[in-house]
Length: 175
Picture 1 (cartoon, helix red, strand yellow):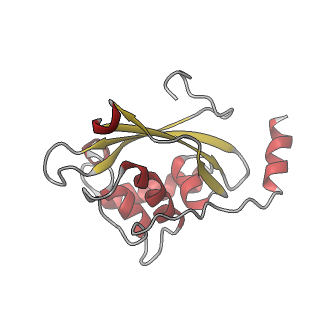
Picture 2 (picture 1 turned 30 degrees about the vertical axis):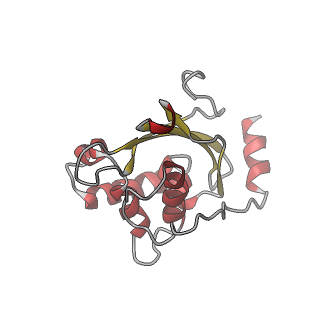
């Protein structure tokens, strides 16, 4: 049963992702020099260490890498964004912010898929997480290269779609 699987996973000591990319650990804002392959690990490490070097530094990094869509939803109010992320993480261990800030592990499952080839401005990648209570989720990241100022040429996160509890996306062809 699902409960048995969750309990079994909860009793395992699963190490958190420790892969690093040179030059990314101190980045707090998007830069045209960052490759799209660097974005997901950079954000996940920032969120894992949310309060390093200051309170909510990881969430502020996630905000900086968000496209205008997310910022519009929160009416450009980073404080509301941070409060919402904490509330969601605290209430729902398998939510994106629950697993990214409090989860046991994460790993990239797929190579980056750059839509349109090497010059494409949309990229996707799938990541798997294990929550603090042992449940698995998969996440489909969609990143877009900014085609206008500010931050012309920077890769930002357009969306992060969640799988169901079995790790399936609504349309398997999309994953």
